[in-house]
Image 1 (tube, rainbow, N blue to C red):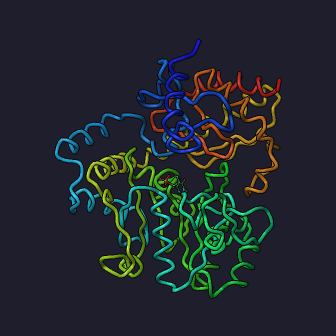
Image 2 (image 1 turned 45 degrees about the vertical axis):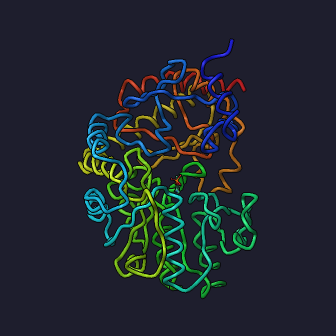
Image 3 (image 1 turned 90 degrees about the horizontal axis):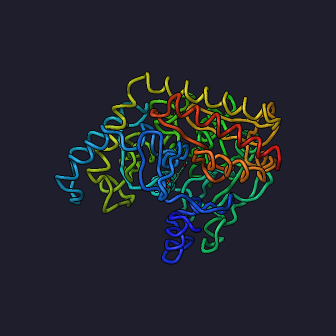
Length: 431
Ligand SMILES: *Cc1c(COP(=O)(O)O)cnc(C)c1O
């Protein structure tokens, strides 16, 4: 007997590549049929067969208050009723930009876009323009969206020239991106010494969330700031995931580092498509029409997304919110570790605030870069994922992703997680 979920996904596959609008949703690495979700409320979501799940995907981090929070819904509804897109300035743009500026030291100006991909792509164009240099440096396993120049992670080895991760990206294009491991300042310094005059910018996820979670070593981000300064390159922090998630203002506030440019998306849109890049006036005023660096967007700064962002940041500005997220995160980590221990499965949980990844690896040994994460037992992950799902928990369908939660996740949700995690680690122990 097929479920409604299965029938819907078959229909989706018939009309969309792989049945999805973004690849990881298709459950390719874990197998099985993705949930077609019909509804969300607070910490919970319901699929097409009306099965209820506690959600730890949370719009891949975009949801931080909870699904369909009444404050956000009301604000969006009020704004929708007055028109959705004009292609002219709206009051909400200035209001959201002011909130972002107030939270991020060193930001004078904000340019809104619609996605994280656009934010990083545009920030790098600006960096290339103001430095007059062409090359970019990134860290392996850091994801900065799907634009051509950034779709290169390169293989192992300390200092590799970029090779494209996808057909369709010209090798010459990817070759302008150098890649080096996360948390390896010596390799980074060496790369900059070799190519000093050519490097426009270093772009980095301050807490890596797209290789599984990797926290920054003490001094890593400050070291990157010093190296870029020394060589006249810009430090671009990709805070698309961490911005307003790991702290008010993001990882730069939490870890005390001052970037030249910051990229934001996800949380700042309150569940609507909003991205931004921002920085000092002297840099940002090079962006058109204030300056010559062209970048534009029909739906950029459209009022509904701005309104959702404003109400979201207003909720988050109360310092209690991040304390609550920290407490929930710690409780969740303890639950996962206890459940794994009871089943005799060694796991290492890496967590920063409300982002975390469960690795099947030595609990005591920090995983500091993609190359180390690739040595973990990712083959066990599909078993873990399936058992969680069968026990009412929706978890990101890849071991190279972070799991998220919201302010709506409380004791009842953690109880569901506890039961599901015990079953899941027992399944892993049998595998
Ligand atoms: C999600 C993400 C992006 C891409 O954002 P989109 O809105 O999906 O284009 C870029 N960088 C990081 C760190 C992300 O987590």
